[in-house]
Amino acid sequence: MSEVIDSPDGLSYEAALQAFSDQSLFENKTWRYSPQAFPLNSSQVKQVRQIGQACYDFYRAQETLYLRSVEGKNLLRNRELVAPWVAAYLDRGKPPALVEHARAKALRGSTPMVIRPDLLITETGFALTEVDSVPGGIGLTAFLNRLYAEVHGDALIGAGEDDMVEAFYAALCSKAPTINVPYIAILVSDEASTYRPEMEWIARELRRRGRRVHVFHPNEVMPLGDTICVGIDGDPQQVDVIYRFWELFDLANVPIAEFLLHASKAAQLSLTPPMKHFQEEKLNLALFHHHMLEDYWKESLPKQSYKILKKVIPQTWVMDPVELPPNAVLDAPFIGGKPITRWEQLVDAGKKERNLIIKISGYHETAWGARSVTLGSDSSREQWEDAIWQAITMSDTSLHILQAYEKPTRLRHPVYREDGSTYEMEGRMRLCPYYFVDDKAQKAELHGILATLCPADKKIIHGMKDAALLPCVEVE
Image (cartoon, rainbow, N blue to C red; front, side, top):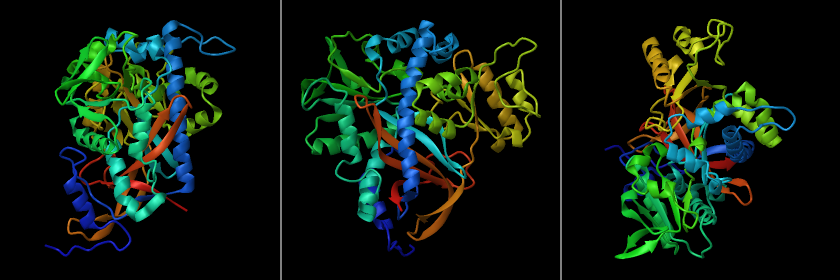
C-alpha cells in the first residue's frame, strides 16, 4: 500500500475516507475527494445569490403565465397577447387529475421550497442549463459543509450557526400549519432511493436537535380522515408537513397520491414542493426565450431578474413537430445558414452546427440524472439522428427541448488519488446552489453550493465516480 500523504492545508485523505465510511450519503455512489473546497470570488458569489432570486421570480412569473394561458386571459398590460398554446405545452401528457390539482386556487402562489439550478462555469460566466425543484444533494452538501468547515471556517458557503440543515428545517416549518414543533415526514419513493441516505442523515441531525422529523417510504403513511398519519412506536402520529421526494411522473407508485390530489380544504396538512407539473418542465427555459413571450417576461419579472436570466439561460427551443404552411419556418437553429421547416433537418447539421443538446422536458423517468441528454457535437451522426427521432416520436406525450451547448471552461483543482497523494485535476465544473424559499418575504436565500468537477474529457457533467464532489468557499 502506498504511503498516505496528507494535504498540509486542507482536509486529509484519511479524514475524508473516515467521514464517508462512517456515513453513506448516496446509495452505491462513490466519487473523488479533495483537500479543499472550491473557491469562488466575491463577485461570483454575488452573482450566484442574484441567480437564486431570479429563479424564484421566474417561478412566480411562470405560474401567472400558465394560469392566464389556461383561462385565456391577456398577458400584457397595454396590448393584446393571448397564448393558450403555453398551457397546452405544459399540460401535454399529464393525467387530468394532476392538471386539475395544479390549477386549484388553494395552491396559487405556492412555489418549490428548494430551488437548485445547474450552473456551468464557462469562459463568459455562468450558464444555467436547468432548474430542479425536487433536487438531490441537500444532505450531501450540508454534510460536506460541516466536514470542510474545519478547514475553511465561516468563509465556507452554508456554514455557521444558521447551517444548511437548520435552514432546511426553517423552510419546512414555514409551510406548516400554526404549530410550535410540527411533525414532518420526508417521503422518499423507490425511484429516488439513491438519495434516501442523505435524507435519513438530515432527519437524524434534526431529531438530535429536538425536532420531529422522520423519513418514510410512501407505503408507510396512510390517510386517516382529513389527515395523513404514520406509525411511531406503535401509535398513529398525525403529519403536519410532507416533504415530497418523488417526481410527479412517479405518482402511480405513491399510494397516497389519490388522497393528496383530492385532499379537501379541511385537511390540516402541507405538502411541499407543491404538485404543480408546470413548475417542473425544462421547456420553461424555452418559453423564456420564445419570441412571442419576450414582452411578457419583461413586464412580469423585476428588471434585474430579467437581465440575469437573459444572460445565463442558453438559447432553448421546444421541439414540437407541427405541420407548417409552405411559407413558415420553425423557431429553431439555422442549418447550413438557412432556417428549417422540419426537425428532421437537424440530422444534416454539420459537426460545428451540432453544438446543441437534446433532452426531455419533464414528467418522464429519463428526465433527471442526464439520462435523456444527447450532445450533438459529442455524438456520432447515428446517435444524433436517434435522439432527434426519439424527440419527434415521443412528442405527443413528452416534449423535448433543444438547447445551445455552453461549453464549460477547463480549470484545475487539487484532488486525492486512491493512494492519498494529491494532484491538480484538470476538469470542467458544475455548481449546484441550493436556495431555500421564504414565500412571505418573496425571497430565495442561498445556503450552500455543491460543486462537481468532472474530468476534462467529459462533455456532460454529472455525479460520476470519476468526478470530485465538494462544497464552495468564498475567497477575496
